[in-house]
Image (cartoon, rainbow, N blue to C red; front, side, top):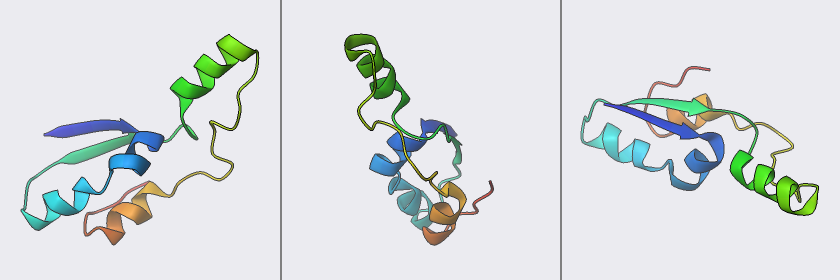
Length: 75
């Protein structure tokens, strides 16, 4: 099974990685690390002519988060 998520979605819902590790469910997670909530950024830009902080100032280290949850993390 392959799970595709953006970095903001992973930040909100990524804790199921721990559950898959705990139950030995083989899942490959692909996280598109584009620096924040791109959909929110684009909608705000379209509606208001600018975005109001929908982007991360510092990128998330998804590989370290995955390792902390017991999975193998790779950048």
